Length: 151
Image 1: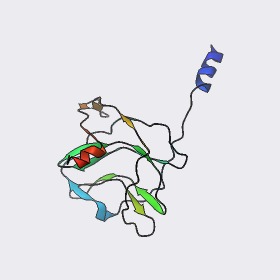
Image 2: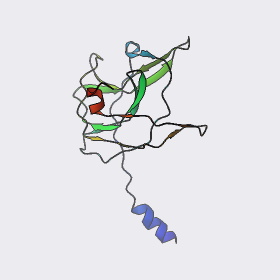
Image 3: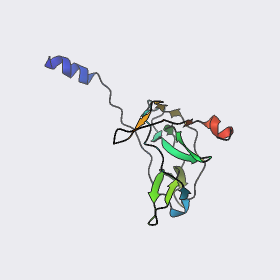
């Protein structure tokens, strides 16, 4: 029995996800949102298509007066850039602010053009469950074509 367990464990491949170098979001990137997003969506990370690619986690994005899920993706880091992951913060007066994830020039901190995704996550369409066990509709997943169609 013990040998069978060891063979099963030895046969499993554990893939290390390479993350980009991070930098904080500047206060100027924060925008007011009326309510918080649902809990995070479950994603399956595909194999890295390139050893230099870095994984960008999926995130909720405020778009056209609603939250949409942007899939996680593999990207090649732009030269001299760091990634500012999305944030959601509440001000001392209770106002909710959000900033979407973006690559920034390492020298100036200015946002730069998003690289082309080399691979994207598979996203569960099942309802999202929060820490209390309450379920929420999963909502739409944002794809590049959605942005072109004005969603």
